[in-house]
Length: 135
Image (cartoon, rainbow, N blue to C red):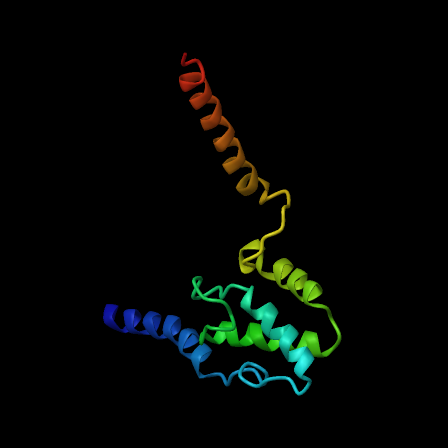
């Protein structure tokens, strides 16, 4: 009975994972836009967006299904007339600041910009006090 219950639980958890990989890719995941200027804008934007699954690759370089869906969204939105900044803003609202390799200063990211400056000032003050009084 315990083995049957364990097998049912394993199957229940494994089926959703298997279903994600069997879905076909989004239409514009691997197909470029017909307009070369729009495709260039989309490609430039995709180079600056992080794949949330790989985390070390841009969505332009990643083969993860999620990166394909994000490429599709970027291309569709660029083709519909949105600017790259509007698309970046939409993706940031949807996935958070981590999605962008070019983070904006906001209420949640300002310490990332302020702490290095403060550390340099503190080190400079310590060095000045230590070595600034030499004859």
